[in-house]
Image 1: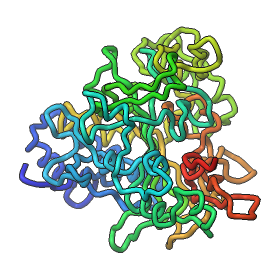
Image 2 (image 1 turned 45 degrees about the horizontal axis):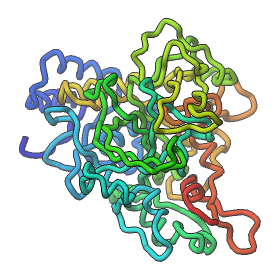
Image 3 (image 1 turned 30 degrees about the horizontal axis):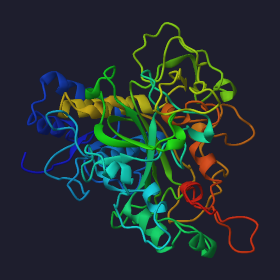
Length: 486
């Protein structure tokens, strides 16, 4: 290929998917795959775009706004995982998954890690894209400059547990899942320009408001990604993962020998939250993706029109083969509960194998996600049958149905007639946003995991001098969790 041209399937006077198929054929797609692309177009009913541009906002229709949001989520996933140049910009000379192995460096991995922003010495100002590498990792003969370093051991802060401190996620090889949070340049600039990475900066703040972007220019607003990484073993099929070599750092307090360690591992992307603040959605758009081999469905699932009260005590399937990363048909771990400690006390030692998790999906995928998943997966496979990106799926998208026309700062997410897509059927008490859990991040709290309601209560860590409460932090928890005020 000599350059980038967008791939699109959808509807119109001249079916856009025909254009997509003709372009895909240049990459060697078979006639069978081309037919599957046409079917995918019919499943979605809306234009599906494969391209490097992160959409600045959602394109809403009256027909099915939930599907519009899900398409927005997939467009974002594709753009964020587009092949990257060495400086972290999209490579317009290629296309997602088109390499011989179907995998490549991606754009969002060049963004700044929140841990790197907050782990600086007190007199240092964060530099965009700078990665802080523990000395032990730098001294390793395995380390190469620019290599991914996973130095945090949780979604945020220095733990190794899922959301709500509910416990670690352990795969069938006994390895602990690792996590990181990265933010785009507009979000980074807000944090740095207002010194929100310091106690003094948080105390001096009068409000916290991240950018919604500009729909007239196409400039993107604040975007944050939260990634779950699985250490790949011989039991895993690495060709089904976005996989990278990484230096995995473990603090001594989480090891049986009490010594810090930094080891080279191949890690695969198991889960990804994408959170994007836009003009129409100043309460952010919350998209959640998983690798398709993570977990099986529970024996019986709740849907978005049933009472979620039983989601945290499901029945694990007993007829599923042990082909999933975070599920075993039997073992010492209760269904959808954290594995027992692997030490003599109540702690976990990350250098020792632990009992595997036994997680099943208690929530059915959000209603319109499956056909949109099929459409994108089919097109990604048509681009390259070896593409790793065909093995990811959207779990769902949360959003506020109170559509805005200008950027506002409002953490009061529950209003009249909002979130109808998550409202319990025949409810007379108003909107009830039901859970949307990612098994790699909220697998043990599937009955209560709700992106918007959880993040609406986020605040800064440091309080203004003389104040009894801290300021709201515009749905962002890392400003509270990463800052050390002691």
